[in-house]
Amino acid sequence: MALRVRVVSPDRVVFDGEASAVVAPAWDGQVGILPKHAPMLALVGVGKLDVDRPGGGSDTFHVAGGVLKVERDQVTVLTEYAGTEPPKVVPREAIVFPEDAEG
Amino acid sequence: MAGAREVKRRIKSVENTRQITRTMELVATSKLKRATDRVHAARPYAQGLQEIVSGLYSPALAEQYPILRRPDTVKRAAVLLLTANRGLAGGFNANLIRQARQQLEALRAKGVETELHIAGKKGIAYFKFRGEPMLTQRTDIGDRPTVEDAESLIGPIRARFESGEIDALFLVSSQFRSAMSTPPHTRELLPIQTEKGASSADVYILSPSGDMILERILPAWVRNAVYTALVENAAAEQGSRRTAMKNATDNAGEVLEHLTRTYNRARQAQITQEIAEIVGGSAALE
Image 1 (cartoon, each protein chain N blue to C red):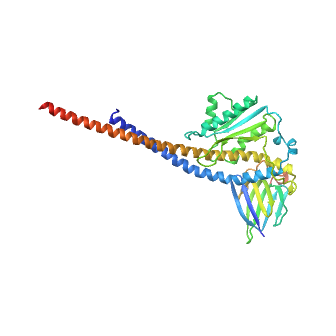
Image 2: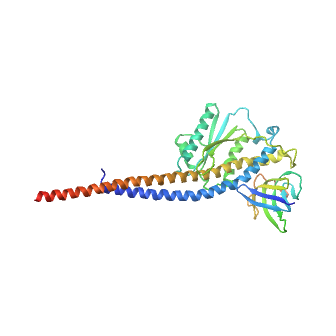
């Protein structure tokens, strides 16, 4: 059983495919998602999103802000920003703790 | 009947016009293609956000957050009109302007104060001519609207709603059903309209709480509605322009056909007349 992962930013679908595991930057820290995860809605903070592919290897995206939904092995990350580079401007909806702001 | 030479000059001029409209049609076609791709690319995000917002919304929350407030009586309403920066797109701009005017009149008839925010040169030019005050005048949003464009457009208006300066916001833009069908459309953006979806609150692990997620997501949702409208409007503009320019090119063809016939007839008449004169002249000599 694999996860179906979609990473969607306002102007395009950045990633759509299968994954064995996802590590996403939720608003309060990294959250790991494996198949059969309970349904969840979480705010997305700013950071790296790792998508482990079923055959090995992984894709990494920088994301910032938005919301993450897990339901029946479908992971949807709706994010203000998604790309291979860190965002230049942090969207104002994203929660950033002062101690993380520097890194 | 016009002389053959004048007709010839008009043929040249119509041919030039047809050349120009045909080029504009081709340009619009290629821009339309890219604009349509952007419309489709923007849909998954809009749909996903809509599902989440409908799932989390509950009337009890409305009292807590300024962006969710639902005024009992609307005292002052804003109309945000999106038009194109350029003309020559058939009825595109005129339709949008008419829609906005009807909206303004309907509000005023109900005794509601109105204010006007416009993006696009054509809308601004019209309402300036009418002497209507405009709170926002934006002409810098081009064929490829970005999320930042949407935020800078809606941000101040959203703040006015949250602080209670306005009680409603109507967005007037073109829907993009297809390249041929781009009707003007009014959408009540604020107060937020939600059809109650299946509630996610009981089923999901929410992190943080449902209302805190909503608080963060709703501004993005409003902004995304404007972004989607900007993208669709840009595509609709190109669609209208292509149709208008195709009609102009076809009409120029018809005019040319008619003028060519007139020209041939005039030329023939001239030849006939010259022969008659020669025959007459030689008959007079005998």
